[in-house]
Length: 309
Image 1: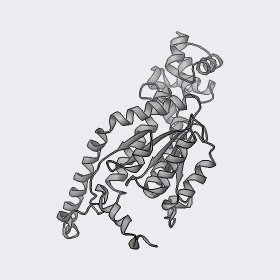
Image 2: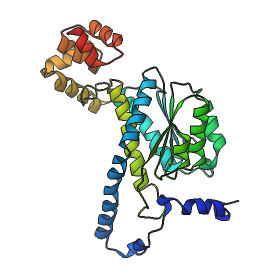
Image 3: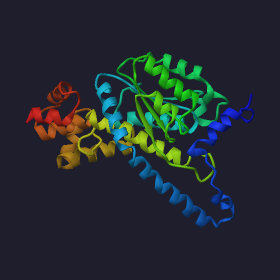
């Protein structure tokens, strides 16, 4: 049976704010391009305010996730379509930005890697795919699964959260509709109400932007709580190309105020490790002592500095 043959599914969509039709926009295709761009830009401006309303829920989720990741847990994003792609993107950006270990932040999308580039028919409707994907991770109580779905009803995301709770993992449900099944199924529900889209039902627009903003917050603030930054400096950045090597040098210089030659020498002595280099310059210790101090304080540069000084 196709979705067009499912009156129950059509009724569900009719009740979703993100799927609502806006008659006042029925002739936007007749507008001049600049006016159309202004209209879309005005719509996008409302997204940040919608996220603001959910900040207490986001902060609570961050603290709960960080507590578990500090014990060795993983952060797993699970979604379908745009939501899944955003989760995969967030996970992919954590290793170069925060030097996370392989598998520490995971992005699961319904239909697997192929679905990142093109739609995989029926994948989002499969609870079995979600259960199989998560079973392969052997979840523990220290892991967190974030189910992502604009509608808050996508079977893949719902099944991911329900499976994770059964396994004892922490769960977060991120949706863009109030009273969603996804938020109700998770311990931490985050519902960013962005309202109807410029193009009816095109949740890659405001809903997608909102999900990207929230995922940015979750992963970034968790990493801040885990000590992967020093102030607003990315001291765990991984230097995998020339631009990042230059950024590492600049970060050490900003954190220490040291001259270029001293920064270069510190990075060379510590094998390019930014936190170690900063510690050698600010605390006057050698590379081996810096490594020992950081290891003793869970990689938290500020705590290692306090101990050294």
